[in-house]
Amino acid sequence: MAKKPSALAGARIVGERYMRSKRRQNPDGRMPLMDHLRELRNRLLKAIGAIIAGMIIALIFSNQTIHFVQRPFCEAVINGHSGCHSYGDQLVVNGVFDPFFLRIKVAFFLALIGTCPVWLYQLWAFIAPGLYSREKKWAYLFTTTAVPLFVGGAVLAYVVMDRGLHYLLGLAPAGVAVLPSFDTYLSYFTGMLLGFGIVFELPLVIVMLNMAGILTHERFKKWRRVLIFGIFLVSGIVNPSPDPWTMLILGGVAVVLVEIAEVFVYLNDKRRARLHPSPYEGLSDDELSSIDDPEPTEPAGSGNSPD
Image (tube, rainbow, N blue to C red; front, top):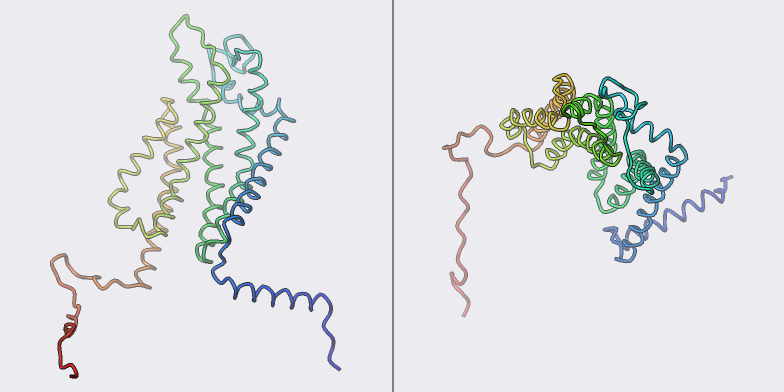
């Protein structure tokens, strides 16, 4: 005796039939404009909600987050002191409301970085329905790779930031007290983290340009030396310390990542050439390809026409 399907199995069958009928009615997966706007609104609300939740958590631990942000400044040796315990070695604020807005700025910046996986996923989820399965795979790979690379660059910037601060603050002439405001330092802090994070995204940009067919390994080899020189130049700009070790750490790690990206570009070009061989492969610049001439066609109106 045949076993009757359960209610859950029947509901699943009905749902699959309904989805197949919807796909037949709309095979391209197109959405009306209002549906796109609603989807965008929902994604924005989720991303903003995650950032606000991150800000609330950062404000709850406001003292700890402020200490975390100013730690590189306090570890920089200034006038023979360290640790932000004496006048002249401390950050200052000028206005009455500056301490309040300062905590808001720090909370927003840390929440923006801490919740980047959430709002990057919301951005990807909004774009993904309009992509093919192959494009979705690469978009997902881009999202999951961009976050660790950026965070790795930001962590490295946080570790070596005190060296650059020690050099910059030591440029003050004798008899001049250096009293930087917290806003000025926060701009430097965010610039360093963003600068290091963007430098670490360069290998990912190289890989994505190669996947799009814009950058080939032959073209990359022509600009390889210039690219490495530019990496160390940017490393020196974002970290103005005269200590060469800091620049070598940042530039060296970035160059290693670029070399890994170059290996991927080389292997991907080999795979692409194997799957789609070019008709001009092996030909010199002045050699003609063996393409047969097209057969001549009769012009319109020629030939015998019936009376």
